[in-house]
Image (cartoon, rainbow, N blue to C red):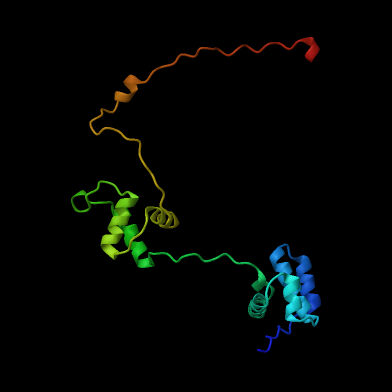
Length: 183
């Protein structure tokens, strides 16, 4: 059987219990108390029972604690899948958005997500979903904007001619004088 990994010697059981007392993170408290039991001389099996985990998890906690201290026992956010586009490709996409599409070349008069995804595939051979591209563009500082549709041949004052004017059906009442009872 392999020898147990030793804990850091700059902490002791009292220090870990004090850290657990001051912490507001439940999983970190459980881990600190399990490691405090090891400092007190408990076996790794007993520490695993205190923490409600197996021996391998205790070993992982010891490695994290030895590497980063008490902060190593906090749950971190998972990094997630890396971006499909690198920095140079993002710059190219930003340049393409800023310059706008050329209808004769790109076949569109405005960029939609599906059109940009097609351009990215043709340019870099990267397949990217519309939703993923939307997240990427949002992270780059772009927002989806759409103008209200207007016919290209519509005269400027045409809308004003067809607007309905609604007359006020009510008029504000004059301020009543207060009755002596409410004064």
